[in-house]
Length: 354
Image (cartoon, rainbow, N blue to C red; front, side):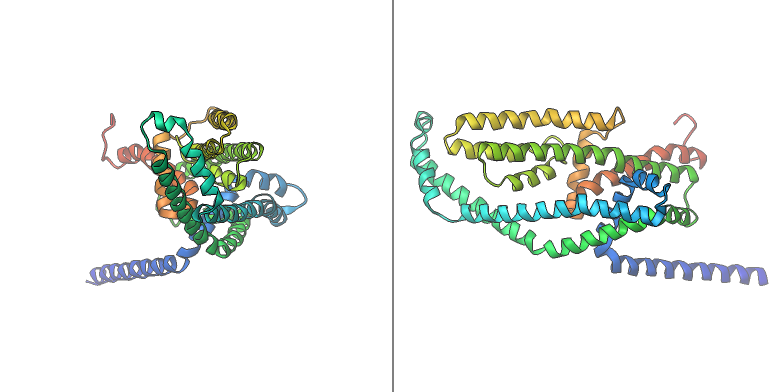
């Protein structure tokens, strides 16, 4: 009887403990959910720059000074320039949106150009009707662009705060990341091999794939900004920012950006410049493949369809940070699925030949 009573008491204690643990985890998640994305991005940055940190920490700098040096470098070279470019791109976009949403001399000149196009008459299209449709479409695009960018601009202070939190997260993950992983080993009921595979999957995805995509996106953004400036297409910074983001999407890339630039040059009557921009845009795909191949160096890359779904799903769930987090989550899922046959055989759920 005492043994049965002790067993019942142990079960009661376990149930109460689990309820308390789940409650505290739920409250903690609710409390910090707003800051999870910058914290996760900080951890990703710490993974990307960990090799540099390890090299510096082996010198006279020590661990904390090395982490501070790396974090300041990330802030000065990456976060601040990206923030300034993003802010300038938003301002340029607002200016373009206001120009498109307001009628004026530009619409009158556009109307004259369209009505004089002989190709419209040969196709049986009324030039006056086409001119009106183009003007209305430009106004609607301008209003939509203006509203979207004004909404983004209202979040700039919040983005600045998240940037600071991201930098702090990166610093502490560099200093205490290994200690945190060691502490978590005994808290997560997973086999050592499973933990190793999951950790390796995160590191490889965050390292090779993200570095390759960052480099390819940066190369495309640089090419499109130089092309816009050279050919006289306005909003070069906005185009570079949009290209950098769109380059993360497989089979899409920066094609919408240079296509809009080509339409602008066509409306301006600059056919030669339009052809040049189209040629540059098509060559960006070759540059993208070359940059990715040089960084990945034969490593296995996520299938384009899987990557496409991961990025769109990540954006839907996490916003713009989803372009980073989506592929990482899918990589973790693939790693878990790869481990399952081993665990299934150990548990007797799968046959030896399955």
